[in-house]
Image (cartoon, rainbow, N blue to C red; front, side, top):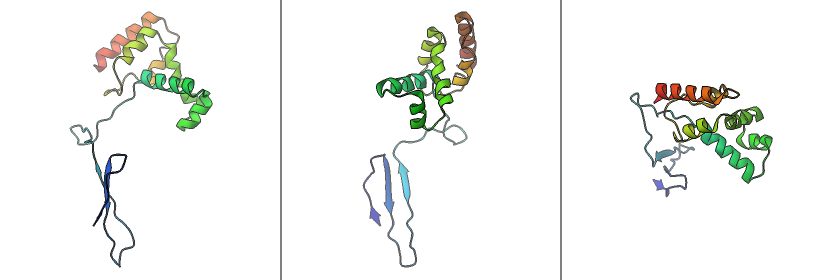
Length: 139
């Protein structure tokens, strides 16, 4: 059996030698990092923090001097989606900071970009009330 060294992406793989009757290879992969699983044995789902994501995309726009359309092409998403995510900057700064402080990724849904869209244009007090109610439900 021919053994290969670990690849740069952290996967070990080896290719068995083929016999005269086989003209294909079987690949065996072993992940270096264990995957966190829930009670069902499936990997735990994580949710991106929309504030972290918006900050990352804003940094890409500024550092590489991209337009939103160019960023969308780079990420293989629509321009509208880029605009939706970056709209997170239109909510109150205190709300953004508190959501940002929760870290990335989030282990429970609730602070999605779509949920935050409903806060745009509302008074800061109403945004803070929504945040406190949602924190109680999620945390």
